[in-house]
Image (cartoon, rainbow, N blue to C red):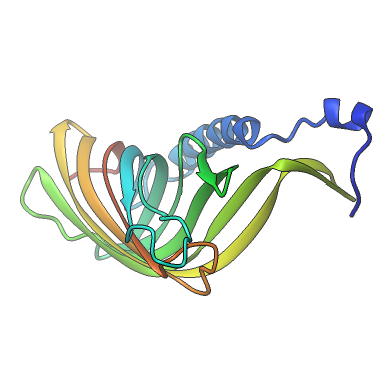
Amino acid sequence: MGECPTSTRQLVSDDWETKLRRLTVLATLCVLFVTLRTAHAQQFDAALGFGSLTAPSAGRTGAPSLGGGLYPSFSADYLIKHNVGVQGEVSWRASQNSYFGLPYRPIFFDFNGIWAPRLGKKAQAELMAGIGSEDVRIYGTINCGFTGCTNYTSTTHFAGHFGGGIRYYVWHNVFVRPEAHYYAIHNNNEFNTSHAARFAISIGYSFRPGF
């Protein structure tokens, strides 16, 4: 890997904000595709959420806190049988924060097993556990490789994930879901903690034959 010349830097097109927009478009297309394919399946749910991350404050070592900031999220699950299935989610800090003077953004990915028992006619619980990763992206440097150039350096850490929430169906298949997530992060050396919690509220839609 080496440093890009000025002309190459001007052509860098894979800034993370651009990738987020592309991810949103791709996720929307995936939802539409799966909707058509699962019209007669058990249940497929997709949701968009907003929340915040909490973590211990900065310690004596001077390492910054991971907490704070607005975290949008996109999640989807597929219930296969007896309200048991699989679930995946991505959540990212909406605005960049400062890491020793450099702008940075954490991104969380997780893939889980989920159990979603029904709680009457208008509510459904969610309990999930799985694995994922924390991707810490520090901006301000141009890095080039075989696949192109980026304006950040990236450090990825393995993470365990536990979460839960309650869906309340406010209108037909549209639901609102308060939720909580806990991340146990391995070797999270950039910060002063190995764990963090995210609290959010999502609005989503269930594609299902009936409830």
